Length: 200
Ligand code: 5GP
Image 1 (cartoon, rainbow, N blue to C red):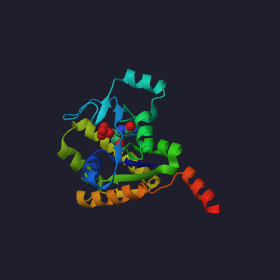
Image 2 (image 1 turned 45 degrees about the vertical axis):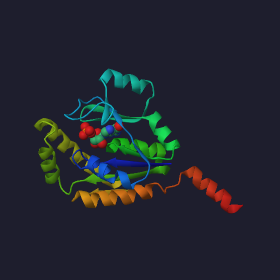
Image 3 (image 1 turned 120 degrees about the horizontal axis):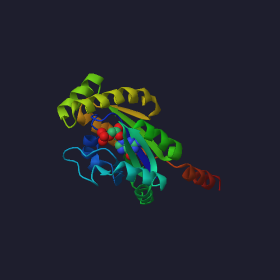
Image 4 (image 1 turned 180 degrees about the vertical axis):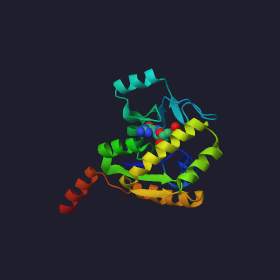
């Protein structure tokens, strides 16, 4: 059972890295989050996110559907519990693209099976340049993402690994190495069993 948490500012290249790595990290499940933000051009419901209203999201919180959720840039984002449990049972590496608050919660709940990576462009200027280049968001939203990124970088020490995305090839290589090592982590339960067996 293994979880890989990826955090880092929007525009850090997380989705590109995962897409490039798919053939090299074995069987995995990329957790599709639920959000109240509006879809960007080219995003589809059920592919990048499940897009829901604020009311629906709050109903789901009440119903206990989320493993974790957080407010990021004034919108809710959350990870549904059920598909994660199913994928873990199937022995797949479960990958989360969540913010630093989500990372904190997952650490508290599932510390023993979690490996985490913070992915970032080399500098704040470079992040701004990439967000503008991508031009998926309007200027105000980009500014909000920059402010959020400045806040998020303060939490970088809480992560097991940091990938500085200078080039996509190098970042993907590092990601593949970490993802394959993440699978080798043993849960506390497995470790207890190893110790019991070892003593017999
Ligand atoms: P974006 O709007 O660019 O898709 O995502 C904004 C931020 O929300 C990113 O930092 C992303 O990692 C985070 N995020 C996406 N899904 C989740 C989630 O399910 N939980 C949490 N805590 N953060 C999420």
